Amino acid sequence: MKRNGRSAVLWILYGAAVLCANLLAALYAAPGDALPWLNAAAGLLAAGALILLLRRSSLWNGAPRSVGLRYYGFCALGCFLGWLPVFLAYWPGLFAYDVVGQLSQVPGRFTTHHPLAHTLYLKLFDKIGRDWLNCPNAGVALAALCQMAVFACMLAFVHWFLARTGVRRGVRLGFLVFTAVCPAVSMLAIALTKDVFFAGFFVMTLTCLACRHAAPEVWKQKWCRALYVCSAAGVVLFRNNGVYCLAAMLAVELLEGLRHRNIRPAAWTAAGLCLGLLLAGGLQAALHAEDGSPNEMLSVPYQQLACVYQEHGDELSEQEKEDLLLLLPHAGNYNPLRSDAIKRTGTGAKHPETLIRLYAKLGMQYPGDYLKAFVRLNAGYLSLTDTTYSRIYGTQNRQGVLLSDTKEDFGVEHTSLLPGLENLYETLFTENRYLDMPGLNLLLSPALYFWLLTALLVGILAQKQTSSYPMSACAAMLILTILAGPCALVRYALPYMLCIPVFAVCVFQKA
Image 1 (cartoon, rainbow, N blue to C red):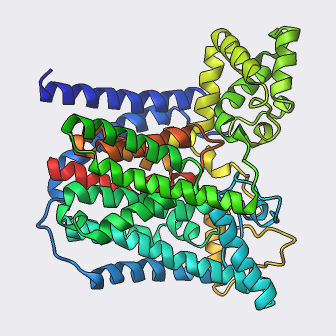
Image 2: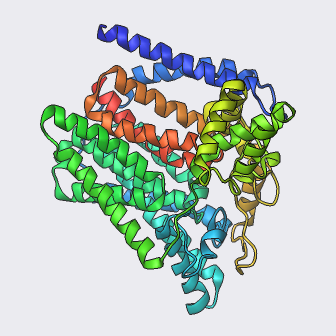
Image 3: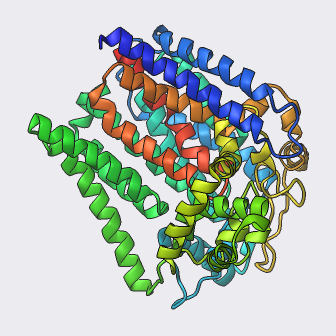
């Protein structure tokens, strides 16, 4: 097939995928969704808009610039200062998400369910605040400030890369404003969650990888290759699914290396992967940590089985019911938007034969319910007008689209230094009033960035950019593991949100 014909087929398939995903989200819309059939129109328009965006390569292609540490420092400082007002509004930082489960771990009771490196990070600053400064708030504030500084330096490397590869000033400025001001970035930057460090290491890894082809003079420098290995190790250390992302990238690099008789690129990735695994394994051995539950990987099958139980429980045989309740004792608590209610007590890993047999059998009988459960669980990633992701935890007690609650029993209290800004953010992101504001509602939609990134991946395939296949495999694996996760959240989308400009450089430099 000729290149133009192949490219046209890929874009047609992409447009069909966007449209079908939004149609399915509309068809299976959860009760309470407003005007669900707008998903179909939004999907069609988005597909066309993204294709046109890719063709405007002149927006990106400029003369490469020789930029140094001054520009890097400017971008890092810009991000940090952009997040500072939010930090002051939520002083001493957002003590939310999984922090309680991690800080509750004690020697002999550690688990790899959460990355041990991040758990130790939290416990270090918790000890500083409680034991050294006699002020839990001070420990949280120091942890948040340190995280903000490190994350700003991570993102500054992406900004530096954009300037080095000739991205036009207006686009670079727009991305800098986005990373400094967008609530999805600023509120997570001050939240003590592992996803911030993971997102930073992930985007740095892909940026170093992009330097191989977009800025080879940078890749040839020792510091860039060392940064790549360290960033890849960080991907493994700060999120359990990071291993799969690097493994997919390594597999593609090995295939390309054998084809061209050059496995040196794969060797650098293997070094980062091995370093990350050695560090993670060393921490687990030193802390005598138990392996985390595999239930996280079974979120989608559990949701599908629970959906069948809810919709067709009366039609199941006694043996099927018995097997299903053996696997999911709390199947009756099925929540279409979140698997936590049933996955915590799931026993599929203990009874793999029963799980495989029952899952295959019920899948043949009720394929529509399996599809419905998957779409509802991931509607926040797939549908451009979905709003269910904004109320996963409800819309009260500081738990709207972006959590701002403070966990109890740890002595940490909100003491806002900018109460006006805090009240504004609470109105927007706890009561979810941002959904009434055109533009801002899309800015926080995980689906927007999901389809932007997948459009860029299609662009790489359409142009046959084999040099970009390894990083594409890494991003594709991230997307697959996110779709297999327990729910659709903005913090899970943060890594692929931030790497979109890096992929855009790869596409537009070849356009």
